Length: 79
Image (cartoon, rainbow, N blue to C red; front, side):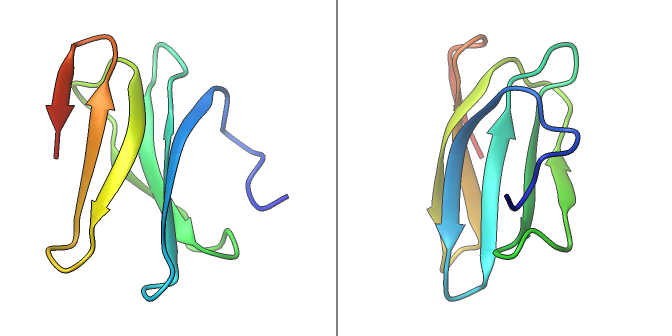
């Protein structure tokens, strides 16, 4: 198990092996969020916590260092 604390309703995950990072979304209301960490689960960082509903699938634009996600509650695709 890499991460099992402060994670209630995980949904999407994306991995950047060359950067050694993983990204995931958590739908838990009232505090949905998108986080990242090293592939071993260390160096956990909160990336987005505001203006989220149900952040879902994640996609990475690795050269541009951007994370895209779908929000199933707000019906938006965001970056």
